[in-house]
Structures are given as C-alpha cells and as structure tokens.
Length: 216
Image (cartoon, rainbow, N blue to C red):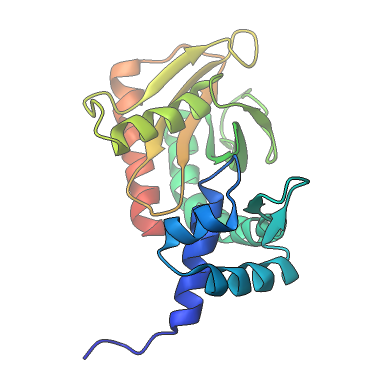
C-alpha cells in the first residue's frame, strides 16, 4: 500500500519547484496552470511560502522564489562537504593536486569543499566560497557539460580541461556529478604542474561518480 502523504505539502513543494525554475517570475494564473491547481489554492500556498521567505513578489506582482531558500541551501553545504570529503581527500593525495567540489549557484560556480594534498612541496591554494562564472574555469564548464548530458547531449566526453582561465599557469580538470536530483555540481582538481590527461581525466571522472553515489 502506498505511503500516506500530505497533498498540501506536495502542492507547496511543486509551487516552490516551479518558481525556482522560472527566473522571469510567474503570475498567479501562470503558476496555477504550471502546477495544475486552481488559483485559489495556489494563492493560499504562495501566501504561506511568502510568510516563510520562500516566495516573493516583485514590483509588478510577479512571483519568484524567495531568498529564504538560500538559508536552506547553506544548511545543505556541510552535509555535501562531509559526504564528498573522503573522495576529495583520496583524489588530492593520489594526484598531488588540490581537489574541490563545486556547485552551481545561479550563473556562478561556487566551491563548497576543498582538499589540498599533504605531501607536495607546493600546490594551488583554492578556498571554500570561491566563485567564478560557470563559463570560466574547469569546474564551471564541467557543470555546463553535465547540463548537456542531462538533456541528451553527447556523453562520451565526461571531463573538461582548462589552462590559465582563473589563475595564470593553473591547469584544471573537472567532471560533472551526474544523476543526483536537484544538484548541479562538479568534482575537479587544479595544479600548476603538468597533467597526464589520459590518466587524470578518467580519475577525476571516477571521483565525480563516487561523489554522486555517496549523495544518492
């Protein structure tokens, strides 16, 4: 027998999901059509979400996801770090490179976990909280690659390499974390030394897969 669920909660989560995927905002009528629920019910659901900061109205009255979701996202980051850190540690120690887990945050790539190797004479410093455009650097480009793969694009290439895009002389390799609902992320490494891409690329791709398994 199917588990008993809350219809109101289900509808509220659907409203929130639709708003999160509508950067231009929606009217009540448009939101009602998207969710498949009548306007009166949607109005009540939106009012409740507004009270919790999870929905907001702009000056024209269009509805958007609220800034309260940022607090929820920040609360998730420690969980992601805890689950990913063992994989990143193994990757950093094996390759002698700084390893990182990066997530999409709007149009930017946000580093939420960084592990530096313990045995190298020097390595690239990369801090948690570092941001850069998704179109720049291996980590962001790997997230964009993950979007292409998720929409049926060519999945034969599973990693991205860049040179000097974020730091002069720095080489980066990253692979998308695939198959985790609601998460757009990549695992990558960065170094100032030379890389044997035929070895490093598959190893980073395997690490991204390991992270996906741990998060699933």
